[in-house]
Image (cartoon, rainbow, N blue to C red; front, side, top):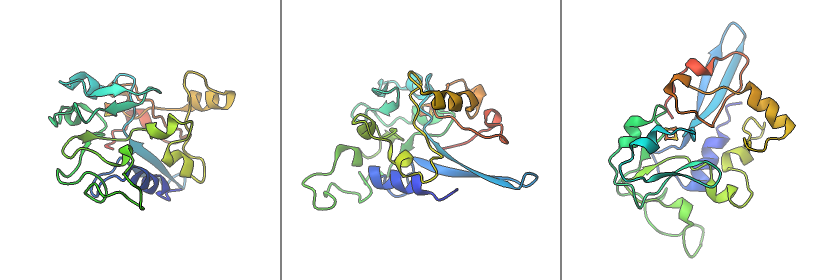
Length: 199
Ligand code: SF4
């Protein structure tokens, strides 16, 4: 419904720095059908990630659920992944800002900021699929907050019958890019395969 709750939830959960967004909403108008569609764009967590192939220091790796993650301690900030990614997913934060508040001060009276809310300035970053939450059996923040359940987290290796039906209908954006994104989209109107979108 275009409420942007997923965008806000990601910002809040991960304390993504000002000027950097890990996800955003795209809007599509279909006048003939009198339909407006919104869809969330982020790192697509590809099965065959272009970013991983070009990283000279092997800073890009698969997390425990197949999510594509960046080891910022290894990243040298060369921006090769930015050039290689067909979805424009990797971002670079302000070299002077490590989190939303731009310093290491703990938030909300905590003794230390959680690791997933701070990043090393000037290194690549993007959606982690909230790996810190999924590792505890929780949903990514964007999925949890979606009031219409437009966002669903699906276990491709062990889908329920309902999830199998979703997978059968799901499309990938920019299919010709050849990276096999795991983030997929359902629409009866839009041909996502031919679409080019930047995260
Ligand atoms: Fe890598 Fe881009 Fe695919 Fe994300 S969308 S896994 S950054 S190639």
